[in-house]
Image (cartoon, rainbow, N blue to C red):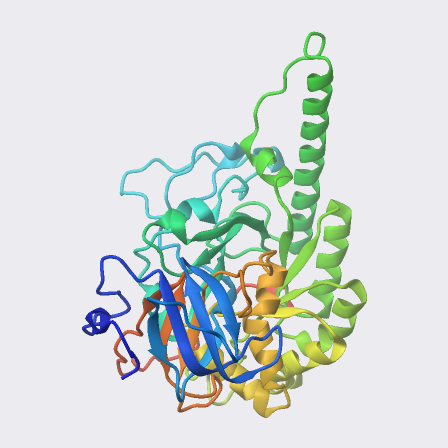
Length: 458
């Protein structure tokens, strides 16, 4: 078996839950193949975890006395995988619904009989703005998707509240913890903007209207900030400005996450970010193979959705798809390699994918088309951490980083490889039992940021 000592900690098959009440604080994975990502591959090395931190890693490490030792022979250790753009950790119904004027919002799953919010009278009401909402406040350990995510090797995710045009502030979270607060690694990674979707059906409804909406919102935030500064300088002569949580949320944004499926949407997004004087991160990018040059020129990072376009199984068999649609299905899986060739930093999103293991399968298809495995792995680990501002804490197996690891019985991108265990904050979790896939008819909904130009305009 994998354990060489302390057999009392052998787990009794509970899906992804440690049996021990007090997990060991000192662990050593010995004689494993270690993929550090940040440096050389250690064909036979040891990594030591102490109190949730990587205490040491190398080929000639002395295992501390009293460590819980995992026999790593035949195993490969990777940094824990990071989902660059998801809702993992936020159970369905947790996000808030958009309401006019930044007034109190009710849950999306509000009970029957809950009064509907007042009809928006225009942009002054700021319909669709939830800029005060933070994913860190919505995270729960009870999200049932976390087991499956960990079973695929994911240990962290950038998770975002979605409803509205301004969904709220994303958070970088670990996918396990003794409580929700312990799951949060970085509470504010940026403000999510959309071009529709998220259940939003109010004003505005066109791309032009949404762009004007964002311009006005940022103008309002600028005036609000100026008023606060003027009042701070002369509180005796200047009227105290009223608190506006919607504008406070805008001013708190470190970055803005903007959707762009193709070159035209990318041009609009970058122009908007420049007008807002905001640092952009693009998400979606289904046509990344056509966007790489512009992204490189502007040094804009990307969260690439890898739900590659496929033909709807319930589509009319007599329907003839356009050349552009056929090209998109054929070329989309080449987007990762195109981004790497252009020197664009990118992470990977599972958005719209039901089974987290399909993220690895999607990248495997890109690898078959020329993407190097090390580049695919970096997108799932260190690049994701760097884009979200936590590269000093996550994304590679280096001394001093958070002890998030995935241990497999082979190459991560080999179809036969299985995840044996993951460590999150130094605590060991086992994968849940595998269940046969449930057949589903038709294609899943298009992931945010992956809408084609035709879908956006119509």
